[in-house]
Image (cartoon, helix red, strand yellow):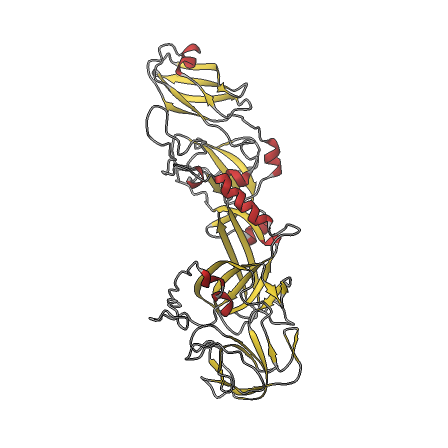
Length: 486
């Protein structure tokens, strides 16, 4: 049977997701970074190898059970996302002179009266939120287009924050919605998306069921010229009136003289125009444009299609000088969004979490290099170097389920253990894990070993993104914006 999921369902989902960051008993979310080793294409498809594309062209992650495990294998660190790091968002549409913008209409996608043609926007969109009906100006104000002067190009940038409809010299009519704050511009404005919020002043001035725009659908012919006033907007509202101008027998303009209230539908018939003085007029049709619930500007998130949620996270150097959770010694190629992971067997709460394993070595000769294979001959353990802290003699590493990164040639993943020498394979480095109790990243551990601060395979992986390598530095900040569409 024909059916749809409405945009309100999408809005509902975005609201529920956004609320999960701030609810008293809500979820805990972390942004994870990982994959220090290069992507590599393989012709094998077993558990030990994987077709991952290349650094220049990584493949799209698969949505399967593996996606709940793989990101933990090579994760480097994770940072908690707070409620202040989250906002509703909409696609960014900059005002540009010479562009013909779509108008707000309540009936995109509906069949037009009298024929089988679907009502579409000027740009061809058949849904409101696919239409280019709002703009972001150079003053970082957001306006909704109510009238585009008969599908002509916009040449005058709208300005001002008046709560009434703004008319510009190019014949356009705009509704001011809100202004991006300095904080929103810094944290939630990207090339493709921008924050959306409801301006309280605009919202309180909105009138539910008012009619501010009527459009000529069919001009008709044969009517008496002149401006004919006092024509009521019929429907389920009250007090709405328009005046109609007839020139050379056809309707050339419709002006709302009283917006009225309470309309969820409205009509103006040819007979009404005739009764107002346009004697002889036939075939004229007027479209009454119904405003969103509450009126224009009452709820900007719903009106502009805020079924996107943007998360903004900044990674500043090592993030924590005491624990060095975020290494700057290696790059990363993978971003993930984690929900409710554990740390040490309990729900994670720390602002940052180290995701690598670590070994405190003694008697080291040579230098371990990033991304090289490490081995422990006595146990058969295999790993991949993430960072070598030569000052504190701490070797940070990962173990994946791929050959030379975590498992041996027989397909076994074995943990490094005991006071058994660890050897680098691309250098002459080796060292012995200490047997004394030591501290790595604020964790006390014995026998010279430290597990990750984030428990592997805990919680849920909601998002995975493979990308070209991003090199980190101690004096560098990476700003990562994730946009989730519902």
